Length: 277
Image 1: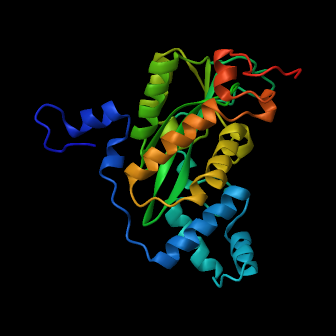
Image 2: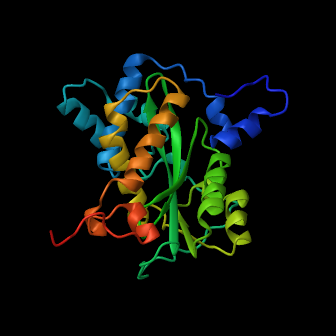
């Protein structure tokens, strides 16, 4: 798909054309023991099911499932995965001490139209021989996934790329909500928001419920797709995610949206059938 010997297009340019992060192209699975990868996947399932679980609770649940493991090993694997045992959010949310933190603007706000509020977050994605990270930008009102990127590192670059793609395709929101992770408080990310006259909004520390719709997206995509399949490279994972997210946006009705799909709500489309029938 990418030709490293292309005469006129650099690898970076080819990645931008294909809509992938450059780090995804250079992805090489980290060397982990197969048993540890299986255990990390199980930990991710338990954490996704209930993000407030720490290492003690997860170790207890694993033992109830007849998986013999001590708490110290669970703690070690959670650190590798980027999940912090005490604070109920992924380590990807660790703030940078020199970055500005913006106030949370959504408390008490009625959100009733597309492009009023967008939100984003990062999650851990288990793979056959390693793992990657997924970032997504979502329209809060319609639940539509506007853009997404994969990366094997947790820097701000792939988050900024996802933001820029969403802005180029869908215009701009009034408010953009994130957690306090260093990727989202970085100068590159916040300056992109401010340059486009978008108000930054950031969750209170430790309050994963402030970004509830992104959290629900992670639960859905993992339990209804990712945990049911295996991926041995970044290209296969990206292709599978592209298909699933397209179906999520255009074919999956949500009860909270009166059985409409995110695309139908975002674009103001009527239901494809007669509700009275």
